[in-house]
Length: 280
Image (tube, rainbow, N blue to C red; front, top):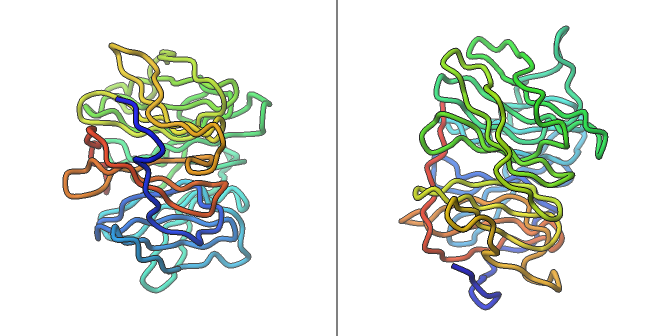
């Protein structure tokens, strides 16, 4: 189903170039800012800043944990943090090791075994990106190198048996099976994506919501219909560089995203229902 710009509502404004977004276990939305901020946004639209990275720097992917903390990708410091937003405490979750050198941690997700996989995008158009796995014991390993073209957003499949990964340049939607030992299987290219895809969100009926930094478009992909426009904005005024999306609301059918180019967060009531994000 395609929606119009009249269907899009503004949820909040005044957010400093937010890219990462997640739904916390407290029912609130959390977003990162360009100067190291973490914002809390209620589903009613009340916005507040709750944490600040010392030294600043843009924050990318955010993942909610069961204990209320957030895993935050920090490309400036080339690491991931686990952040307690209640007391603004930042603890290292993953950093470079003797075997894995991080460059641009971007987006992550928990796997069913409790390990955590995240994209390291590498350099723009250098085809040197890869995926990293943080084991339950805290060790890190290079999980996969089959998606080198600026791997960006990723999401666990609804059945927990694989990861959907977006490559940004050239744009592609890829599926990687998770093998029984937790390692990566052989990738499958599901669809080419025009422009610069950034985030992917899974629905309960198998569709994938794909938000694009460029063009100013959110796509929906399904096995039956392939890639279609969910909502787009040729002028970039209302849908403006949508980076990542999340489902919220009482029925998990409200699609919410930050507009990187407009300093605001938008929402769209849809017919789709989001799959709950796995947390540990």
